Structure formats: structure tokens, C-alpha cells
Image (cartoon, rainbow, N blue to C red; front, side, top):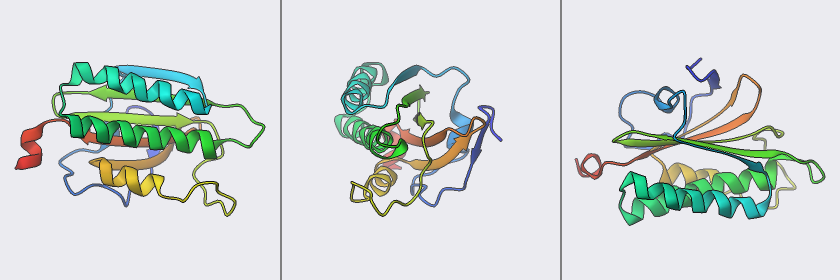
Length: 162
């Protein structure tokens, strides 16, 4: 169990650039960005816009920012589309923490979890896309049984070149 109280299943989607420590170990006790919104389609754009503004603090290249925003958008869209029954209301929570080399983003909901759905309205490409864009991707639940998608992105360009 990590300092954030999360239980994690080993991810089969860790990126090839993984270096020391797990994403769950890298999240600080107080995130640099916290959002809690109703899980509605229009709030996916709100989160994406917040990460656009967050980039002013991060100083990352345009491609890295585009990858971060796309992965975050996919994870938030998954919450809106899949986490809750049609008539149920629920939340979309986003935490982000960064240091000089990495950004860790946690997308959380209190819905039904990540389960295969034969009636899924999507194509099932969201999580594989996120895994391609992020340095690492971890799927799990916290102590309150909230579903969490944890993504880590490399921020330092030198590490990518090495």
C-alpha cells in the first residue's frame, strides 16, 4: 500500500522509458492540481483546459503537452462514458503532481470499476492509447474502492534523448 492509501494491480502497460520507483510512490500528499467535477461530457473539456493552463508552469514541449492532454482527455471520457449507470450521477476527480522530471496524473471515480462491457459505446481504444502516450499507466482502486487511473509522463527532454 502506498502513502496515498492506494492498492495497485501490476500494470501490463508500463512504458518502455520506465525509470526507478512506481508512479504511486511519486505522488505527493498534496497534489499540485485537484479538480472534482460532476462526471458529465462538458467537464472533460474543463479538465483538458486546466491542463493547458497547467502547462504554463511545467515548461514542456508542445508534443509532450499534446500527449498529456490527449491521455487525460481519454481517461476522463472513460469516466463519463463507462463509470456510472445511465441514470446515476457521479464525480470525476483529477489530481496532478509534478517535479522536475515527471508529471503524475490520477483520474478517479466512484463508479462500477473497469470491467469489460459487451454494450460498450466505445471502441475500447482509450486505455491502450493512454499506455502509448504515458511513461506508465496503472489501474487500481483506493481504500474507498474508487477506481483510479494513474498516468506518469516524463517532463525532461534530456531523459528521452538518452
